[in-house]
Amino acid sequence: MTRIVSVALILLAMGAAPVWAQPRPSPAFNKEFQAGVDAFRLGKYDEAQKHLEAAAAMAPTLPGPHRFLAAVAQAQSRWADCIASSRTAIELNPTSSEIAATRKLHDACRESDGRPAFSGEYGTGGALSVTANVAGATVAVEGLKYGATPLAPRAFALGEVTVTASKSGWKTATGKTTILPAVVTDLELTLEEDPAAVGDGNGDKPVADVGWLRVETVAGATVRVNGKPWAVDERGRFALQPGNHEVEISAPGRVTERRAVRVSQGQETVIEVDLESRATRARRQRAGRIGLGAAIGFGAVGAMTAVLSSQALDDARDAWVIETTRPENASVPLSESTRVQRLYKRDEIEALVQRSDRWAMVSYVSYGVAAVSLGVSMYMYARAPEEQPARTSIVPVVPADRDGAWGMAVTGVLP
Image 1 (cartoon, helix red, strand yellow):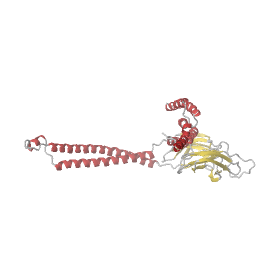
Image 2 (cartoon, one colour):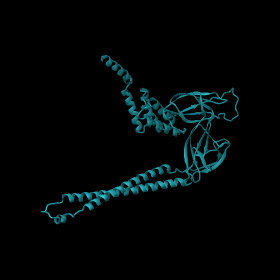
Image 3 (tube, rainbow, N blue to C red):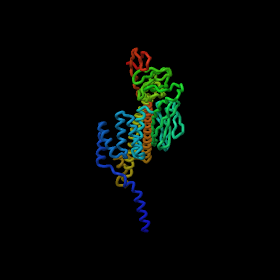
Image 4 (tube, rainbow, N blue to C red):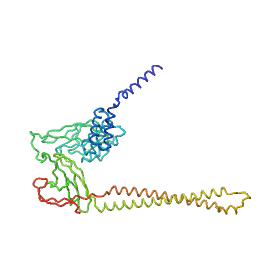
């Protein structure tokens, strides 16, 4: 018996050892971390970043400082830093109680940075997106080919992976990254031109500091990049500096849309924009207003019928109390007591109860219809937000941003 107890104590100590070995945050860490959180909530982002970076240096295995550093970066529109800090927080503790909020922050910063979204199912893994300075380079992950650059996000198992990008005329680029759960891992590779190789004549040699954007949208649409018209090349592409750009697409009778797009050097980025007609948007907004009005109306009916039901039930209860407490002895004749309070028959009391039930049923149905109408209204308003008018710009006859292109254009909605 003593031996069994001893073995149990040893096993318990072994299981608890990792807990005992886990260092507790120092008072200095707690002070810096709390100062950073307080500064962030007050909108003092530079001060918050300073305190949180100090806290992260003191306890590099804790995800909290990195999560708030990501939030600070998002508030300052530093999307790459936001993505990096949120990834660090996820990697340090993928089972944290705050993991859902951290992933949401990570995805929001990726979207703001113009990176492609993942539309599949993560399952028990994550996703990988690969870009390079050369379009059409073959992407291989752990030796298996998965497509060409830019490689849209696709599901992968968790863990570290080795990725290569190769193309004729270029030296193969290799990179390593770690697939994290339920988020997209972005990897950017840079291929160097192979001076010993013979060009393949496909015209994909890199243009210094230039990438391309192709916008596929409705016929007759006007596209503006960073607030102004932009010339296209012979292949219908916009030549842009690598980085983030704001693209505005508008067309007569269509709702204007704006997209944040990230362009990489030597790569062609394609976006598809199906502009919604203003008539469809107006119908949805009208349906939203009708739904909201119906919700208010049926809600008012539900409230009024609930009051009527309550009153009918109170009348039935009062009548029942009167009849059950009416004197039944001969010393007080019935004719005397009915002078004080009229006589209620059983049928009348039951009728009052039934009236209460009917009003209650109407109230329940009205509240239900009001809830459905409100849901429909909210859905319609979410699908049909107020349109931001296209900016008006008049461009004189001067060279456009692409060499050799001249023109004048008036775009946008005139007041």
